[in-house]
Amino acid sequence: MNSKKKAIKNTFSVLAFIFWAALILLCLKYKDRFNVETLSSLIPPASWTSVFVLMVLFAFKSITIVFYSGILYAVSGLIFPLPIALAVNIAGSALMISIPYFIGKAAGYNALLKLNEKYPKLSMIRDIQNESQILTCALARLMHVLPSDPVSLYFGASGVGFLSHLIGSLIGLTPMYVCFAI
Image (cartoon, rainbow, N blue to C red):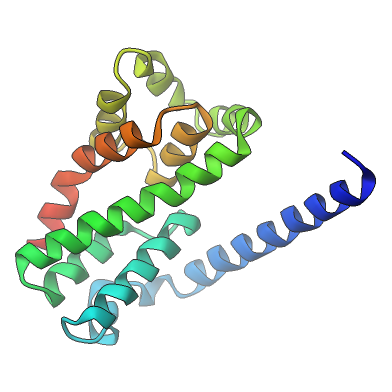
């Protein structure tokens, strides 16, 4: 890689880190405002606009790690009738787990090593991953031992197929997005 491309890549990495760090700091500073009551009062009543706003919040959640997805599931349940709330929660969950998955996939093996170092419990997932990728993804979500975002990063970096990740994760998240919507 020539020096100009390397400089551009390094600059992009630094800017992405600064953006990510700023989002996390904002979340931590205003964490008391990220609650069901506040969000449900700010999001318009059941409409396409409210679906869009919730999707943006699910995407935001997927890159911040510190924002709890249960809040979004509950807000959806307050705004929409249950069948629509469940559809919104499924779509939001798919978005929320896809973004870090593709970040992990792009980051590759080096990210996998760093994730294993930071979250040693990921080795449990690695040990059973070869049996069934869908089952592994579902169990990782059901056990809820680690935050959702590092798990998605791990699955992307470790080479789990996207469809297996999506199906297994949505199955594993079902109790959470159903219960919170109700």
